[in-house]
Amino acid sequence: METINKETEHSNVENLKGKEAISKIREMVDSSSLCFFQTEVSFDENQSARPMSIQKSDDDGTLWFLSAVDSAKNAEINSNPRARLFFQKTSAMEFLELQGNAEITQDKKMIYELWDAMAKNWFPQGKDDPRISVIKFTPQAGHYWDTKHGAGLAGAKMLFGIITGKKVNVGLEGELKI
Image (cartoon, rainbow, N blue to C red; front, side, top):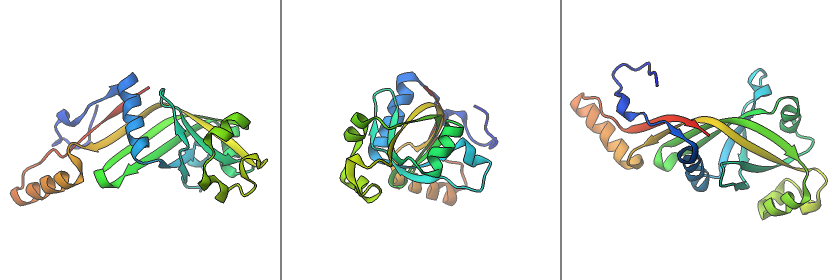
């Protein structure tokens, strides 16, 4: 992995593939079920990423969302299925960006499986609201940034670096290939 910071040691890079990459995705989703969802179409427009709640994550890394059929997001996915998700777990200073494809369905069985009490805020008619759709996001690649020992120790290491003037390796990052 190429880095623009020539002082950074490459020992802080750990690329993950297959099951290890999926494990990293599941670890982040299990601790932070909120993400920003951005469609490929919106990269060229003035729209921003949208906050979304993940309803379910599968063993293969597939992520599931509920969405309104008539939303701009669904229209964008219908135009181009490429999307990106952005996660942040502030307490541990961990970040994840995923790239993949999104697919829309109105499968009633899946809507019932994904339904929770919070969904009623967006779909007041309940599980049978005709505006509900399901977005299936299949990740293909991504990038993660982690502190090695959590936010507290990372902060202490950064403080040590400031005091001593020495470069301190506080984290780990890498590419994800699913």
